[in-house]
Amino acid sequence: MRADAKRNYDRIVEAARELFREQGYDASLDEVAKRAGVGPGTLYRHFPKRENLIDAILQSWMDKVTDAADKALAFEGDDRALLLNWFEEYVRLISQHKGGPAKITRAMGDPESPIMTKCQVLAGANARVIDRLREDGALRDDVETLQVCRLVGGIATVADQSDLDPTAVRPMLEVVVDGLLT
Amino acid sequence: MRADAKRNYDRIVEAARELFREQGYDASLDEVAKRAGVGPGTLYRHFPKRENLIDAILQSWMDKVTDAADKALAFEGDDRALLLNWFEEYVRLISQHKGGPAKITRAMGDPESPIMTKCQVLAGANARVIDRLREDGALRDDVETLQVCRLVGGIATVADQSDLDPTAVRPMLEVVVDGLLT
DNA sequence: ACCTGAACACCGTTCAAGT
DNA sequence: ACCTGAACACCGTTCAAGT
Image (cartoon, each protein chain N blue to C red):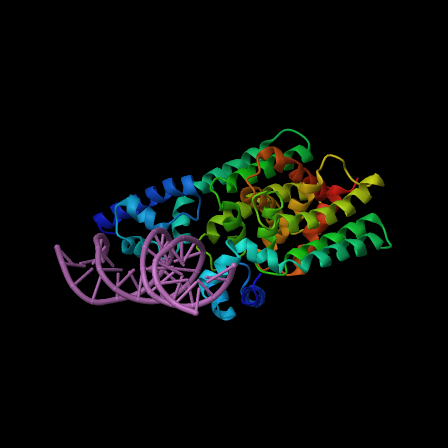
């Protein structure tokens, strides 16, 4: 990649990171380009779809996801508390940008989505936690791991779209936890 | 209301009903106006916001909602089957148009939303079912009825946005049902 | 090879002119 | 009182012209 191309690429990602944090994943790409000081065509050359841009934003996110799963698994306590903690962390991880829960949960099962790989990392992290509980026989066995992501993702989506605070999310997660444990 | 106004109003609602059924609640209002054979200004005069139009569409929906709750309460069987049936019906009721689950679930707690009243009917129907189970002591008491709507609405939202079929929704609802029952 | 910015299409929304 | 349709603003997307 040419030097000026690389510079523009970085500028765009940086501008997008800012704007998405302020306005969510649905912010105007035109404004991203403007902030980055490039023409709209340049943005499209590097990122043909909005999701390609989101994908770049999520680069550092994957480490956070893996770390969170590690921490969840290292938790000392009963299964119920472990799972509840993980789900709260899960919601937090996908709710960092407005519109995130919906986008991420949808991409999870969509092979066409540019952010699918990133979402698979999250799905994998979740699978590690779930499988651990499954081995202990603590979990009902008629629910696929992907469906667990969708369930928790659904709660996060509603919370995001209705601007609920974590206090209101908690009891919903508790219901899911109790429904999942045997 | 003048005769031609009334006629246009009806035409618009009819066109919207068609288009929303085909393309979901996010369909172009311009196309609605075109189909109805009116200028865009006329549409805006009658329905200043998209949700005012959705509100008109949902007029007949309220009866369906009430009927569904009646049927659910008349169900002969155990609490688990009753609640599961109701939730499946709930999902069906809000999933009739693409984008419906998200719009309806969000409007539920938003006093600014023009469709709030309609959504309250749904919330009320749900409350009747939930309260019945609560009286029997069959339900955990630390979850508000509105949160139950959000939980089920969240599942419906994910299903809608990921184009899941009912077969995939069922197990998620089962988790919620089991988590809610004592 | 990459960038720019004008141009296009589409959509929601407004409003002056008409009946 | 109501309707029309041109006009505007905004956004995503493309592409010919430039370096």
